[in-house]
Image (cartoon, rainbow, N blue to C red; front, side, top):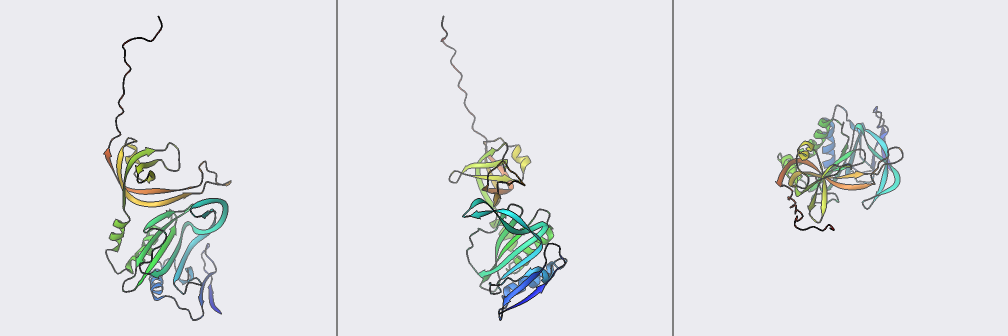
Length: 282
């Protein structure tokens, strides 16, 4: 038998939210502490009626929904984007969809962390936070849109960072999430991304976003060194309502923080034709 308490919220996009726990089941103490701090930090819009403790996770999972909606997106299977559509919940224009799970400290998740995963209509920040004085960690997946209040996003991250007990955690994470690549700058005239680098790793390429003015001033073919945050972006290929000339695809993108030119393109030696002799008939 389950004990279920249904609470209706006044939010337009999130109604009839439910707390659901098995009889005798309790919320994990780490998650309970996170939930309490989250409600304090987000008191201007979040309350217990906006937070779900889903059934079947032994009280070790939490979901916060604020102004979410249903989207029609292409299904994915083993990295491939399929033509079949499915319904997925995500944040609306200014919304938030947060999922937090308690894991054993050191547990390796499938996605590298920290990273920002680009979804068709929103982006999701993924990270792991070791909880101080415990053998547990929090796995956080925070989905939001470009117009979501940035202060709310930072407050949510701040609650998780605070539970590590390490005041230097944000600086450590910033260094850990910064990557460096070297490759030749290339330009797509018309594609999902304009600037990218090639000739690194095993013939890989990486799209570049931000700092377009600086990239524009660099001659294509130059060997450059870039630093920034790597992320995976997805393109669903469009549909009848939202057509696209480009096929469905995933690609790696770097959110640039710095660009440095190492070497200009090699000059092509032009060999002039010999003027001696004539091949024309008399």
